[in-house]
Length: 238
Image (tube, rainbow, N blue to C red):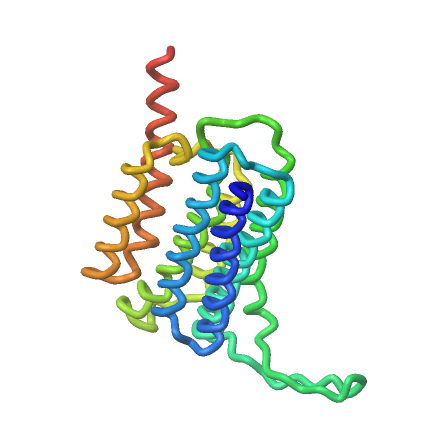
């Protein structure tokens, strides 16, 4: 029975990811972010209970990766696509006579889905890794998704004149690089559950009392702090 508990939380993660995608299709960014944050909470819970109950399994690992791909891969790809459309790459009417269908799409904005592809590569590589590190190698998919989630709110605050496709292309490249880089980042896996819950509570409080834009800032600070931390450890070891 206990082996189903982690998979239950994984299924909740996947469900929240699907709802977030549905809400994005209706341009409801606020609600989409809420469901993504819930998905991240369930993602942490499935790993925590799998370790606590010693019920890790191959199917659980694959289900977790698939859920992460939906929530942390598809969602940021859609957001970046929509931001690129807003930046000036307007959607055009395309007709495929051979299939007797027509639709609107911005071909250049599809660059945003490179984030989705990069996430798939990261999750695939992660499943093949044999060693258990006490740190993350590259930016975890949920953290990368959180970084992208805050972007629409940042540009809403700054104004449309700052919504440049050049900036968005650079952010896309940065996201792709961080997902599959060799950079060491601090892991929360082995940190006390109370500390993790407190951090999640503080993040939630910040988003309520400020703006969802703070999500991007939190991840950028996390990246800089992690790089500084491991660099300092290298200097001390010498």
